[in-house]
Length: 173
Image 1 (spheres, rainbow, N blue to C red):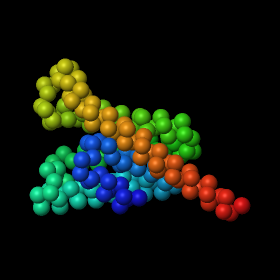
Image 2 (image 1 turned 90 degrees about the vertical axis):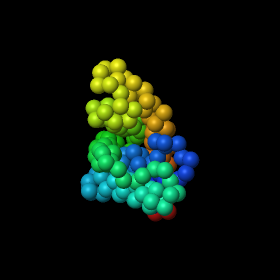
Image 3 (image 1 turned 90 degrees about the horizontal axis):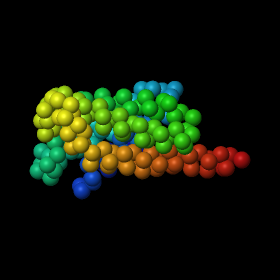
């Protein structure tokens, strides 16, 4: 799971934000409730491996995207934090999975863009309410892809798990 999600994130021509890491954080939180270290580790290891691969590709001139850059730790912190949303859906109810799949990327969008605005990053929008709104507008394409990616990869992870679980119980019976 970690290898597939890591490699997917570095595929060329993938829409920015359409990645499985937020869905992986939700999945880890939902199914590794007893072992919270693994719940938090799954998306972070996936991100680290993909960032490492990005860096290698960047170093050899095969990618314009750097794997490691200053301030990147904030992304790791935010993705790790989103695992908490997974703890809230440990019963696996589809309505909770969908709600978390909408709430987690929305939270990430608001926090990450808010931090970009505070740190005067991105397009360096002014530190006014209008500048904050413009920073949020700047991030909408990424947000849309993040939302779609979380829903798609969440369906794959949670649906796949549910399918495997039902196949397992049929074999036992």
